[in-house]
Length: 239
Image 1 (cartoon, rainbow, N blue to C red):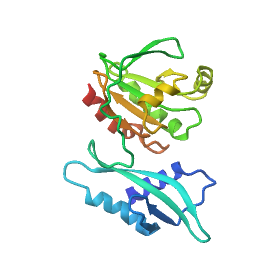
Image 2: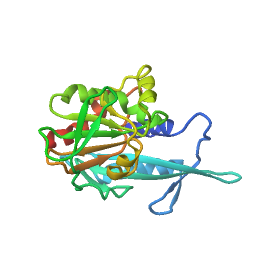
Image 3: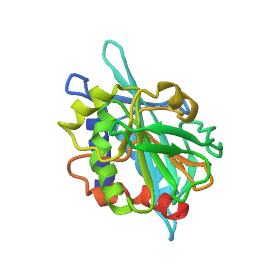
Image 4: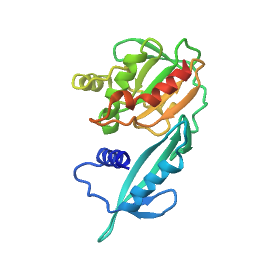
Protein backbone atom coordinates (compact mmCIF):
# COMPACT_ATOMS: atom_id res chain seq x y z
CA UNK A 1 0.00 0.00 0.00
CA UNK A 2 2.76 2.46 0.97
CA UNK A 3 4.71 1.67 -2.18
CA UNK A 4 1.64 2.25 -4.37
CA UNK A 5 0.89 5.56 -2.64
CA UNK A 6 4.48 6.73 -3.16
CA UNK A 7 4.48 5.78 -6.85
CA UNK A 8 1.08 7.41 -7.42
CA UNK A 9 2.16 10.62 -5.69
CA UNK A 10 5.30 10.82 -7.77
CA UNK A 11 3.46 10.15 -11.01
CA UNK A 12 0.91 12.83 -10.27
CA UNK A 13 3.71 15.25 -9.46
CA UNK A 14 5.43 14.47 -12.75
CA UNK A 15 2.24 14.71 -14.80
CA UNK A 16 1.12 18.01 -13.26
CA UNK A 17 2.78 21.38 -13.00
CA UNK A 18 2.49 23.68 -10.00
CA UNK A 19 -0.49 25.52 -11.47
CA UNK A 20 -2.67 22.44 -11.87
CA UNK A 21 -5.25 22.05 -9.09
CA UNK A 22 -5.35 18.82 -7.14
CA UNK A 23 -8.16 16.50 -8.27
CA UNK A 24 -10.77 15.19 -5.85
CA UNK A 25 -12.18 12.61 -8.27
CA UNK A 26 -10.69 10.25 -10.87
CA UNK A 27 -12.39 9.06 -14.05
CA UNK A 28 -11.47 5.71 -15.56
CA UNK A 29 -11.50 6.36 -19.32
CA UNK A 30 -11.81 2.62 -20.02
CA UNK A 31 -15.10 2.28 -18.13
CA UNK A 32 -16.35 5.82 -17.52
CA UNK A 33 -16.47 5.10 -13.76
CA UNK A 34 -15.75 8.05 -11.46
CA UNK A 35 -13.86 7.32 -8.23
CA UNK A 36 -13.11 9.45 -5.21
CA UNK A 37 -9.54 9.50 -3.87
CA UNK A 38 -9.97 6.55 -1.53
CA UNK A 39 -11.66 4.48 -4.23
CA UNK A 40 -8.92 5.35 -6.72
CA UNK A 41 -6.22 4.20 -4.32
CA UNK A 42 -8.14 1.01 -3.66
CA UNK A 43 -8.51 0.48 -7.41
CA UNK A 44 -4.74 0.71 -7.88
CA UNK A 45 -4.10 -1.72 -5.06
CA UNK A 46 -6.67 -4.15 -6.45
CA UNK A 47 -4.91 -4.13 -9.85
CA UNK A 48 -1.73 -5.11 -8.06
CA UNK A 49 -3.26 -7.81 -5.91
CA UNK A 50 -5.40 -9.41 -8.65
CA UNK A 51 -2.48 -9.70 -11.07
CA UNK A 52 0.27 -10.83 -8.72
CA UNK A 53 1.58 -14.34 -9.10
CA UNK A 54 4.49 -16.25 -7.59
CA UNK A 55 6.77 -15.65 -10.59
CA UNK A 56 6.41 -12.05 -11.73
CA UNK A 57 4.89 -8.93 -10.23
CA UNK A 58 2.59 -6.65 -12.25
CA UNK A 59 3.74 -3.27 -13.50
CA UNK A 60 1.16 -0.50 -13.81
CA UNK A 61 1.93 2.59 -15.87
CA UNK A 62 -0.55 5.38 -15.24
CA UNK A 63 -1.46 7.96 -17.88
CA UNK A 64 -3.19 11.12 -16.67
CA UNK A 65 -5.15 13.21 -19.13
CA UNK A 66 -6.99 16.52 -19.18
CA UNK A 67 -8.75 17.65 -16.02
CA UNK A 68 -12.51 18.16 -16.01
CA UNK A 69 -13.77 20.98 -13.79
CA UNK A 70 -17.17 21.87 -12.39
CA UNK A 71 -18.31 24.13 -9.56
CA UNK A 72 -17.22 21.77 -6.80
CA UNK A 73 -15.31 18.97 -8.51
CA UNK A 74 -11.98 18.51 -10.27
CA UNK A 75 -11.88 15.19 -12.10
CA UNK A 76 -8.61 13.64 -13.26
CA UNK A 77 -9.09 11.47 -16.35
CA UNK A 78 -6.82 8.44 -16.44
CA UNK A 79 -5.90 5.27 -18.27
CA UNK A 80 -3.28 2.69 -17.40
CA UNK A 81 -1.09 0.02 -18.94
CA UNK A 82 -0.85 -3.27 -17.09
CA UNK A 83 2.17 -5.44 -17.81
CA UNK A 84 3.30 -8.72 -16.26
CA UNK A 85 6.88 -9.49 -17.22
CA UNK A 86 7.11 -8.46 -20.88
CA UNK A 87 3.44 -9.16 -21.69
CA UNK A 88 0.88 -6.35 -21.70
CA UNK A 89 -2.47 -7.41 -20.27
CA UNK A 90 -3.98 -3.97 -20.89
CA UNK A 91 -2.46 -1.24 -23.03
CA UNK A 92 -3.94 2.22 -23.40
CA UNK A 93 -2.66 2.72 -26.95
CA UNK A 94 -2.64 0.52 -30.03
CA UNK A 95 0.89 0.11 -31.40
CA UNK A 96 0.16 -1.21 -34.90
CA UNK A 97 3.73 -0.63 -36.06
CA UNK A 98 5.13 -3.42 -33.89
CA UNK A 99 6.28 -6.07 -36.38
CA UNK A 100 6.76 -3.57 -39.21
CA UNK A 101 9.93 -4.02 -41.26
CA UNK A 102 12.05 -0.87 -41.54
CA UNK A 103 13.83 -0.56 -44.90
CA UNK A 104 17.46 0.51 -44.80
CA UNK A 105 17.89 4.27 -44.84
CA UNK A 106 20.96 6.49 -44.43
CA UNK A 107 21.20 9.58 -42.25
CA UNK A 108 23.87 12.04 -41.11
CA UNK A 109 24.09 12.90 -37.43
CA UNK A 110 24.58 16.43 -36.09
CA UNK A 111 28.28 15.53 -35.70
CA UNK A 112 28.65 14.35 -39.29
CA UNK A 113 28.49 10.60 -38.62
CA UNK A 114 26.87 8.36 -41.23
CA UNK A 115 24.03 6.41 -39.62
CA UNK A 116 22.01 3.48 -40.98
CA UNK A 117 18.53 2.73 -39.65
CA UNK A 118 16.66 -0.40 -40.73
CA UNK A 119 17.60 -3.38 -42.85
CA UNK A 120 19.98 -6.12 -41.71
CA UNK A 121 22.58 -4.92 -39.20
CA UNK A 122 25.11 -6.44 -36.82
CA UNK A 123 23.45 -4.71 -33.88
CA UNK A 124 19.87 -3.96 -32.84
CA UNK A 125 18.89 -0.29 -32.77
CA UNK A 126 17.20 1.68 -30.00
CA UNK A 127 15.57 4.88 -31.29
CA UNK A 128 14.33 7.62 -28.99
CA UNK A 129 11.86 10.21 -30.31
CA UNK A 130 12.06 13.52 -28.47
CA UNK A 131 12.05 17.31 -28.69
CA UNK A 132 13.61 20.11 -26.68
CA UNK A 133 10.52 21.44 -24.86
CA UNK A 134 9.18 18.01 -23.87
CA UNK A 135 9.34 17.58 -20.05
CA UNK A 136 8.90 13.79 -20.28
CA UNK A 137 11.72 13.56 -22.81
CA UNK A 138 14.10 15.49 -20.57
CA UNK A 139 13.09 13.55 -17.45
CA UNK A 140 14.08 10.19 -18.94
CA UNK A 141 17.44 11.28 -20.37
CA UNK A 142 19.56 10.27 -17.34
CA UNK A 143 18.07 6.76 -17.51
CA UNK A 144 18.61 6.55 -21.27
CA UNK A 145 22.20 7.70 -20.81
CA UNK A 146 22.71 4.92 -18.27
CA UNK A 147 21.27 2.39 -20.69
CA UNK A 148 23.65 3.53 -23.43
CA UNK A 149 26.58 3.41 -21.03
CA UNK A 150 25.84 -0.26 -20.31
CA UNK A 151 25.11 -1.44 -23.87
CA UNK A 152 26.92 0.98 -26.19
CA UNK A 153 29.09 -1.82 -27.62
CA UNK A 154 26.12 -4.04 -28.45
CA UNK A 155 23.31 -1.66 -29.46
CA UNK A 156 23.08 1.43 -31.67
CA UNK A 157 21.49 4.27 -29.69
CA UNK A 158 19.93 6.93 -31.93
CA UNK A 159 17.70 9.92 -31.21
CA UNK A 160 15.37 11.43 -33.80
CA UNK A 161 13.73 14.84 -33.62
CA UNK A 162 12.16 17.51 -35.79
CA UNK A 163 14.40 20.11 -34.12
CA UNK A 164 17.21 21.81 -36.05
CA UNK A 165 20.87 20.89 -35.69
CA UNK A 166 21.73 24.26 -34.12
CA UNK A 167 18.93 24.01 -31.56
CA UNK A 168 20.04 20.51 -30.55
CA UNK A 169 23.66 21.64 -30.16
CA UNK A 170 22.52 24.51 -27.94
CA UNK A 171 20.41 22.12 -25.88
CA UNK A 172 23.35 19.73 -25.41
CA UNK A 173 25.42 22.54 -23.91
CA UNK A 174 22.98 22.56 -20.99
CA UNK A 175 21.88 18.93 -20.72
CA UNK A 176 23.53 15.55 -21.19
CA UNK A 177 21.99 13.25 -23.78
CA UNK A 178 24.55 10.75 -25.04
CA UNK A 179 22.72 9.29 -28.04
CA UNK A 180 23.68 9.82 -31.67
CA UNK A 181 21.42 12.71 -32.68
CA UNK A 182 19.69 13.12 -36.03
CA UNK A 183 17.92 16.43 -36.67
CA UNK A 184 15.20 17.63 -39.05
CA UNK A 185 13.53 14.25 -39.61
CA UNK A 186 9.87 15.07 -38.98
CA UNK A 187 8.65 13.07 -41.98
CA UNK A 188 10.68 9.99 -41.07
CA UNK A 189 9.36 10.12 -37.51
CA UNK A 190 5.85 9.96 -38.98
CA UNK A 191 6.85 6.75 -40.80
CA UNK A 192 8.15 4.85 -37.77
CA UNK A 193 6.64 6.63 -34.77
CA UNK A 194 3.30 5.92 -33.12
CA UNK A 195 2.58 8.26 -30.22
CA UNK A 196 5.50 10.60 -29.63
CA UNK A 197 6.71 12.11 -27.40
CA UNK A 198 8.79 10.63 -25.80
CA UNK A 199 8.74 7.23 -27.45
CA UNK A 200 11.36 4.51 -27.67
CA UNK A 201 11.44 2.08 -30.59
CA UNK A 202 13.41 -1.18 -30.51
CA UNK A 203 14.50 -2.54 -33.92
CA UNK A 204 16.05 -6.01 -34.20
CA UNK A 205 19.05 -7.03 -36.31
CA UNK A 206 16.76 -7.94 -39.22
CA UNK A 207 15.18 -4.48 -39.29
CA UNK A 208 11.84 -5.28 -37.64
CA UNK A 209 10.23 -3.17 -34.89
CA UNK A 210 9.91 -5.52 -31.93
CA UNK A 211 8.88 -3.15 -29.11
CA UNK A 212 7.53 0.36 -28.77
CA UNK A 213 7.52 1.92 -25.33
CA UNK A 214 6.44 5.20 -23.78
CA UNK A 215 8.53 7.19 -21.29
CA UNK A 216 10.69 5.52 -18.70
CA UNK A 217 9.65 6.01 -15.06
CA UNK A 218 11.90 8.90 -14.10
CA UNK A 219 12.05 11.06 -10.99
CA UNK A 220 14.78 12.40 -8.75
CA UNK A 221 14.33 9.80 -6.00
CA UNK A 222 14.27 6.75 -8.27
CA UNK A 223 17.31 4.52 -8.73
CA UNK A 224 18.21 4.82 -12.41
CA UNK A 225 19.11 1.12 -12.54
CA UNK A 226 15.55 0.23 -11.51
CA UNK A 227 14.15 2.65 -14.06
CA UNK A 228 15.88 0.90 -16.97
CA UNK A 229 15.24 -2.72 -15.91
CA UNK A 230 12.46 -3.38 -18.41
CA UNK A 231 14.34 -1.79 -21.31
CA UNK A 232 17.28 -4.01 -20.41
CA UNK A 233 15.04 -7.09 -20.65
CA UNK A 234 14.03 -6.04 -24.18
CA UNK A 235 17.64 -5.42 -25.22
CA UNK A 236 18.79 -8.80 -23.94
CA UNK A 237 16.16 -10.52 -26.07
CA UNK A 238 17.21 -8.56 -29.14
CA UNK A 239 20.82 -9.57 -28.58
